[in-house]
Image (cartoon, rainbow, N blue to C red; front, side, top):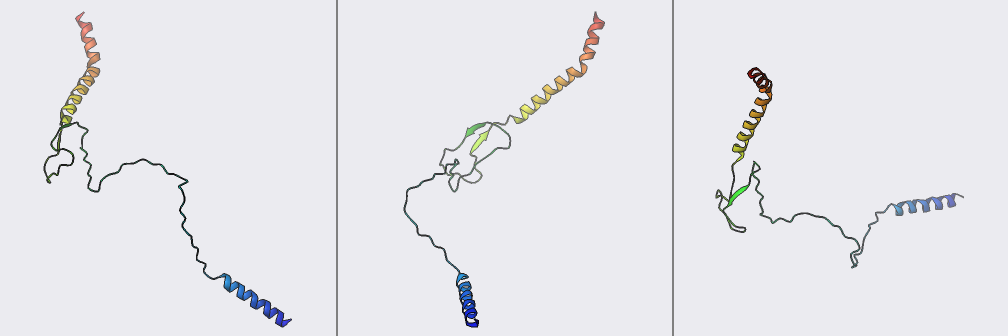
Length: 116
């Protein structure tokens, strides 16, 4: 009985030790047709491409260079219309007139009644 138990114990130990070995998984590449496709949208940009954004939302008035032309640092590329200040001033003037009319509307009505 002791020999049988020892033999079973030895077998169990050897099975336990052999199952703990690191198994390396491997894959063999195969040449096949593509069965799935992934679609996406985006923009392809060149390595040295640069995007320019103006601070105000203005319109480009004049372009000084053509696409692909090398430019020197500090040289102008384009000129934007600078009408932001004019538009701000005009908007402020119109807002002032509208506010003045609302505030003084009752006084104007009272003045018209007195003229009659």
